Length: 300
Image (cartoon, rainbow, N blue to C red):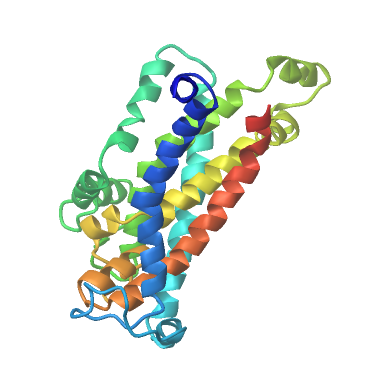
């Protein structure tokens, strides 16, 4: 007994305990709901069978019915547009800000800290702020565009089917901008300065140094930023709930919001679970890309 207690306090048992407790926590709060959701996507589920785990098995019928629904492919297309546009905007603007603040001019540190406000704010609060900004009648964005001469009439960002999805994309880019900037700034700080000095002595200009030194040295960081951005973007729900509610006429609906709408508005829990399973596949793929892009850093 003394040896067992000693092992648990300082030894292999203590190491197993440190690892086992968080693994058990993840399995209980994440693993079991994922398994339940996966099983439910192969079952016939209604309001009267929610309390039972043993429900009629329908195989792939939920997936087949989902593919046949006319709104499925437009919503998946909106999801792809939302993910690609959001990640591209966050990465390009975040990289530009990381390079800008890398100059270390006076006041750069506190100004960089102001950009973190968007990341620490809850998604629903961000959605409420952008509801103001994107308002068709008195929105700040319309005012700026109109005064600068880019538009002649107000754009109803939230209610116009041509702009509703882009309204959420703009808000999501702003929300994830600081996260990209911070991670990319960390990657830039890890590049040895003598490489730039040597390249400058060899006659390389700014653009050549960027493509021959900065981008190759930032490869693992860029992979991590893009894959994490993909995970966070596929999980984005709050902005759609706060700004457009997937409308009008599903013009801004995406898979993650659609899964919630199917389950808790239309009470089609099996279809909602099916959409969630499809989303999980993409999230797992992004997670594998993230692990692969950072494996060298972990080993080092």
